[in-house]
Image 1: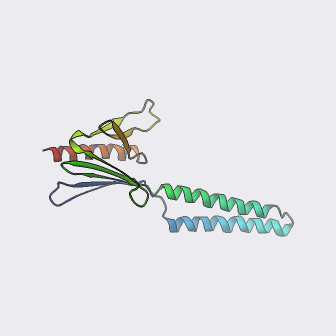
Image 2: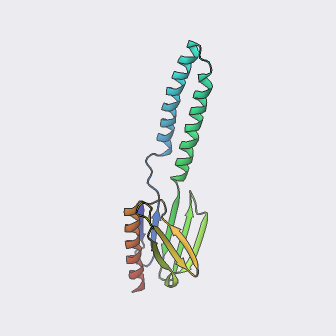
Image 3: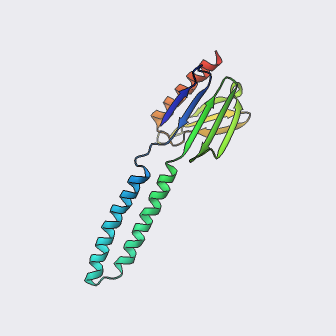
Length: 161
């Protein structure tokens, strides 16, 4: 998801990039709860019939699903913020707060798109300046990447004039 905000004077632009989230934490917990109820009911049914070894594996299955959902949800809270002003370009990356920050002179920065060698692979968007190459928007869809590149070029042209 690409969100672009500008200041009143339109000299400061903030581009926020986030992956698309299909569920939030609340509904993920509901999903885990439904899986747990189903697995435990089947496990207890087998337990009462005499197959006692099924119950621990049902518990392990619930634990494995919960761990996988946690990792997927944790990755879906990535965030990248690109702040463009007439002088500076600032990139912040993190999950809930900025964990990594880069700051460049905007006039020396370039937005590059590395096309894949094979059509199955996604394109990569890079911000390059002074020998550093910072990938941005790796979690975006191809349409969102195309929109991001177009909008960034429009913003840079607007700030340059």
